[in-house]
Length: 287
Image 1 (cartoon, rainbow, N blue to C red):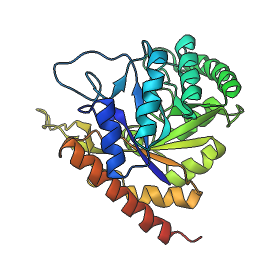
Image 2 (cartoon, rainbow, N blue to C red):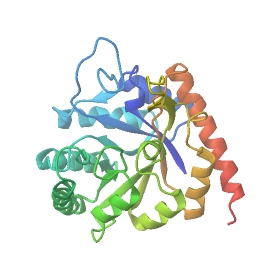
Image 3 (cartoon, helix red, strand yellow):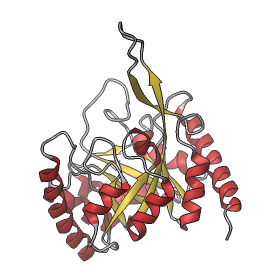
Image 4 (cartoon, rainbow, N blue to C red):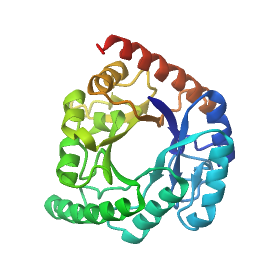
């Protein structure tokens, strides 16, 4: 396996700082966040993220993205795009940028499930992905669907239904440990087997479920929050064992949105932990 960092999780660093630090820590690659974001007084994961490339003017930024990545000695694990599948013009731009960079694969986002009748949203997204698959195939890249809570594809089953019959060389799925703890969780090995050739990429983060204060009648409502890899509800060892059992040996991208420790320490310790878990679980799975 190869390990990379998604720069959504490195908001304090400029692109140059992100590439330099990630490379110095020994990561294999980087997954650049590309989106037009809101400004913020302080850097944050979703607004004011300094390690994000704007979608506006992206084409002019491609030489600098390529230079920073290349000079740091990093590979592209993919591109973290936010273009919605129905935004055809920007999907095409992201696919073309991915091809120009040699980044191989890019995320295309799915509609939120609360935007209308699920059946209509799903049918529209299927048509959009059929179109995206054709464009991706013409460029030699892959459009990725992430398993993400509160969208029409929170689970492997839903993603397979969306993509089934399309060329797995042109479309694929990002399996995500953390997102699935919020919505869409299925037995990991079963989900990987279900996806089969559509499993293209893996994201790793972790989540904690926390109880709220009891209400007057004693009802307790739970909420989720991002957690460090070691202490969240997700069993990282079990996750890697399933990946090894399935035979996955591709990219694993870390996107740790917890803030218990400073960013540079967090990324450094996460790489050490992931490599330790990967080696331990690989040895535990019969060849």
